[in-house]
Image (cartoon, rainbow, N blue to C red; front, side, top):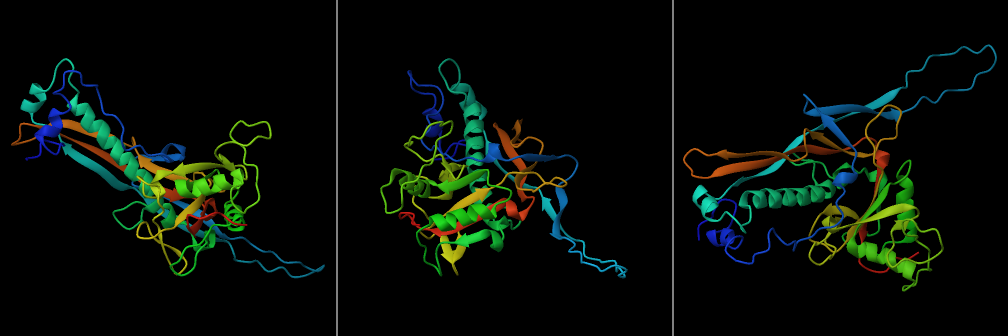
Length: 336
């Protein structure tokens, strides 16, 4: 059956309109949790497609001197310049032709144009959340956290191509790498459940107290909300969304691919824009609105309009100490 605009077929468009008692809109069947788009500080560019900033590379060391010593000027100020460019991401859709739009409109009918736009933006938002973690940084794709994290800020639970249980020691050490401190601890659902077990006392690890937000008394919550004072954010974008199964691959002991394996990662994130004298962190670079909607516009040779949603964005890491990763973790109990 032929496609009708953004719909797979005429029948797909018809099911939005052809039932007398049809409930307006679309019921969510593909919910996703763990979006961090709205948590990221935003730098908006105007009249430019890239930003540059300088990081410290080394600080002067100085030396001790005796009285009447001869002092020799030193040349040891060192900086690293970082450039981040916007990338283009989006989707284009044809609306149903005008005959379909006229036939399936009126009282009780869904607004097909609005549904096309809403569903498109939701899909793009999901993809951005995924690429905030897994973007390769290779043109034309945006940067992701794995691409930006340095080897000095990455710890490994596994070895070779085999994952292993996360440990409290490794998790603590990873969070201590994030300076000045992590704002959130990002983790897939299965690893978050393993943190729950630490609190619930159902494995061999000692029972520890992980308070919930606003908790003023010593009581146990049904789900761990914080770890060492860092808010835990459970993410559907770091595992198989439908089942929560871990799927990252490791090679030579460290993360190598988003899928194909059975491991997952904890990510400690400090948020922060590149600013003079500040310890930078993770931030989002955009131009204009994050979702720029163009259309609907008429098309030459077609009795149907089109629309496009475009995002000009990229992920940037102001200072390398703002991001830490513990990878290679399997879905087994966290040990000491």
